[in-house]
Amino acid sequence: MPKIKAEKKSRVHETIAKQGILFNKDFGQHILKNPLISRTMIEKAALRPTDVVLEIGPGTGNMTVLLLEKVKKVVACEIDPRLVAELQKRVLGTQYQPKLQIMIGDALKTDLPFFDCCVANVPYQISSPLVFKLLLHRPFFRCAVLMFQLEFAQRLVAQPGDELYCRLSINTQLLSRVDMLMKVGKNNFRPPPKVESCVVRLEPRNPPPPINFTEWDGLTRICFVRKNKTLGSLFKQTTVLTALEKNYRVHCSKNNIPMDSDLDMKMKIEGILSNSNAALKRARTMDIDDFMQLLCAFNKEGIHFS
Image: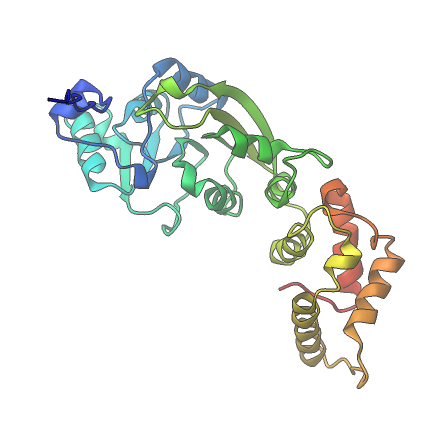
């Protein structure tokens, strides 16, 4: 008879296994089990005893308990009711219970409360939308120290000309100062993810740049759809010209601006790019100032991206 292989047991922490909790990979549940890394993240956040701290995805509460030792209040946002129950059980009857507020639900769909700092081991599949939800949150917070997938962290800090430079890079750097703090190996998590990780510190720019971020995002979305192509070729695309012409007509109508009956949007765009010396530029080499000048040039001629 052929030899039957023994079924491979999943590497689940004994205590959690006894409680019947299996981590859900659909929620990106990779629990940070190394307390040294958790303590380093908290140290890098420079927390104060009067701070309110937001934690996204507290899991079983390893970092939550360390945060509760340091601050006035922790607001923990968790989507999994099983882990909410585990977290509640962990602080029940302790001095930390009144300092912990648990919000049950999806952090992306939840109205976040006031907080001074955010410290979290972020579920990797929500990294990008969460970054911008935090950076556009008002009132401003002081800083966020977050765990991300290594490549995502490298994209956040990439500079013009770098291979990983993208729309995520320039949009994040427009709204914040961002630094990579330390790389974290797979074995520091339970269960281990398939990728390496990295801790990043975000510090929102306060006051923010004096531009409409929706417009800015619309412009960079067009420019980075093919970051190696020239802007001249990108803005010749029919879908782009149609959308910009529609926006232009709405702008003229709202502001009682007379519009040429023989409007040629393609020529108008080419003229703006030519006068801005931007027709031959490529998004992969352009910095924040380049995009700001281009957005101002478009807006000056009534061309809008929102």
